[in-house]
Image (cartoon, rainbow, N blue to C red; front, side, top):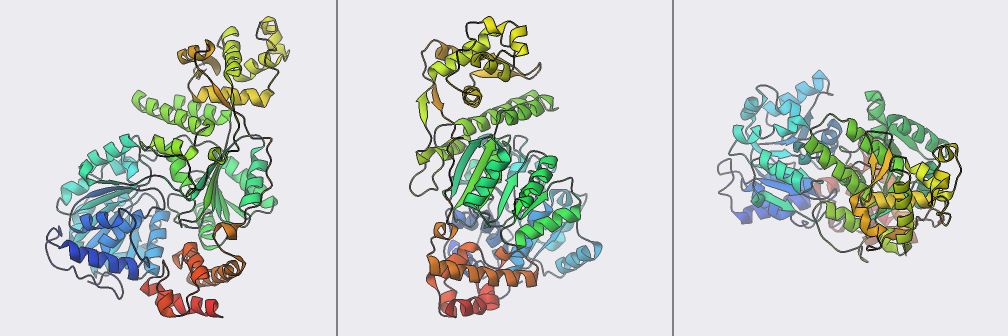
Length: 626
């Protein structure tokens, strides 16, 4: 069987485990497929090591950040190993995206899912029986149907890949019960290697995945979760829509992006508002008609400069590489969610930004949902820890990149010159000794009885003689009016920073009253310094992002880049596929900089595989040389 049009694997003998295949042969084949099918000159760490392990018949669990190149870790072994490769993935959109990209590269790939009409399913089955398909994508539900695992034997499976493997763990942020049953693969086909892949897994989640898939730490390949091309920015909510609009207009005008909101209504309202403001925005959430969701998703993938406003239902299956920003209008419930969602920016390795706008109400909502959730106490403790960790990320005065990495058990250094520097490392964040401020707020919480909400306590500090303040006699307390050095927004910031360090708590069983944690005593006694970060709401920036300059292009190169993008868009519309399945932005950037003059020189550009060179190389070359 040919692995892919025009490229034949030399590995065709040996048992199904592949254990007798020489490493030199595996390495030679993997490099051929990398260069001639996928168009890349060299592997990233540890892709080649994983590929060699899996081709030789051993299992692997791969933890790489979004955009780190996980797909090649199973796609290349799937092309090299004899037999059919089965890829388990949780969403239909992810299946279709991967199938489209592989098909454009000349790989015989297909999917079976519930959204297909009977005629399409029949065609896929016919291709399977004739041995035409090399890589097949399935949902876990399909794989685990009665008798399906036994039926697969007739297609001689050579590899099982489990994408989004964090769904296996009950502590994972996208836990799915069907995923937890995937250990059945090992029992049905003990001689066939299994590779699991994920971009977001803390140490507990990794432990669960290894257990369910009957793997050991020897099977684990983990790279740094750091995405040096992403810049992390956080703003407290002031006027969130206006803050979002300013962020898009000033920094990402005309560029593709994703805006995440916490509710369907907010998605609809925000997308409508952005369109009125001249932004090409479309909504996406589970409450929409399937046809409308599909249309908006295809528009996002196939057009340039579309902004999708979505709930977290959007994105897991989206492999669009040139998303230049991901914005959150509400705080995610865990660093795992945030890492995965923000990681959808800059998958092409070019600079991108992750912007988060949050407020205390986000924290309240997350904790309220958790209090009402019908889950066991152990899982509630884990979720509570995740919410606290997310708040700590928002309120931290240290490097945001470092704070996020630490959640995943990784130590590192603050943003360096090689990174897109986060807002805290930019030197624009002002830190002051806020010990006295903290003592005043903690004292006000104590003297008002540790049962009133944040707004009431702040009214007492500011000396606001509201009906509630006077009714309870709090206008006669010693703390009444002692906090006039800050305005209301300033005290809200102090409160959030105290909460992020666990010094104050919310009574979710009562009326959201604020109480003190025992850890606050050292601050009250002056034994511990409380460093206060001043919120930068008043610091308005009108700096425009020069996107072509950010891509490393001068004026002439930028002009060529735009012409190449227009040509790519024309091809993608004719084929009815996303533009990046033709070439990634990073490939067009390299073309614009190196300006190849011959087909041989074009073949040296990263991302130009043999099949794509034959189909489209001359057209792009004509534009470059014109």
